[in-house]
Image (cartoon, one colour):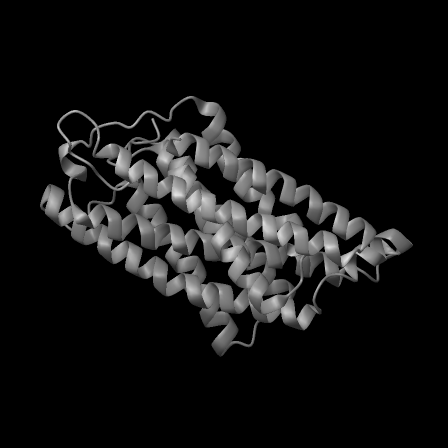
Length: 285
């Protein structure tokens, strides 16, 4: 068995779990929700084992120069998917609302689906600038923050849908039944804040470790590389979120839209910069 097989198993588990969550949302049978959560936990274990096995496999390459599996776009996407599912399951422990999986699991499936179909799963040797422990510290902190921001995005979408439940277009019994599975708007708003409050300091650690890594590799802490610039933009957006929430009393729709905008900026920082702009962060090319 290889890491690819374990990651494929995780993808299959997430796919089935997603449809169990959809069925739960439609039929409101708690057993379907429990089965979906159980399968998601199984997928997370397989996913983590696949990442760990890939790390081990890197040491079996000629020369035995292994490295943490975060060195190219394929590996980063796989870890992004794992971070999303981890954040979702931790949030489920707190909320106990299975319907969140209808929003969270598709994000992980997009990551894992691309990884499985891309054909780019070969383990590659590290370029000299990446041969540092700072790689591990930087990438892990950044992607854990990505996972928290992804959950902020999901609960913000849920909040906006719940807030529209009184609109005429949302008054069908089926739609009201679906929205009835959501936590209250106040709970969603609080979870949104907590997700950002957790993700923001982790993102800050990611920026700091990235600066330390840049100094180690290139002799300077900051060079206004497009990735660095956009990571700072993301930092300011979520700093504005927390500032507005804590000092200006923002809540509800305003912070939901700000969180959605922050996640859009996060995705551009991760994907758009790597795929559309040139710079030192070129593993996406």
